Length: 45
Image 1 (cartoon, rainbow, N blue to C red):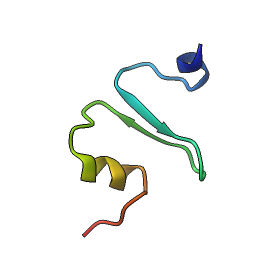
Image 2: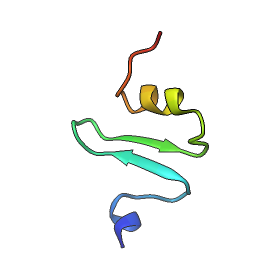
Image 3: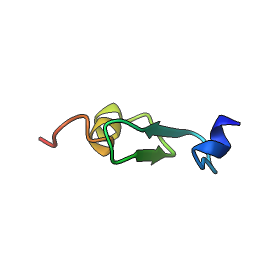
């Protein structure tokens, strides 16, 4: 199972593997800006 390989224990979970370090967002994904900042894909304002 893919979830087991990524050590996903709760849903929803979003995993960014590359570029390292691995980042995981668990729970509410409705705030797009917060998710992008958490995955280090966007700078804080």
